[in-house]
Image (cartoon, rainbow, N blue to C red; front, side):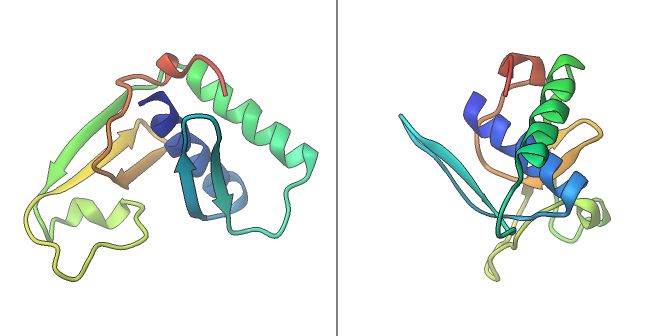
Length: 118
């Protein structure tokens, strides 16, 4: 749960700061990774991503889940790679207050402070 919420946070921060999209991610038992749409990351950029992510964790931002009906105008600001063409019914969105709204069916913390540190 913490890893998945952390992935959402890092994905959102890298998109907000650098415009890099997450192309892939994996949350493993021993190794986790996030692949970004950039050929390289400098130490300075990595430090900035870490600094901003930890700042948001210290702000105790709430993480919430909302469900929208297909076609809702509220979905226009939601970040998502895609929804399948055969998607029908309600759409679940995980929101990190003021940072990110993303379609997701995963389990998440209720507050970024539960991540402790990135």
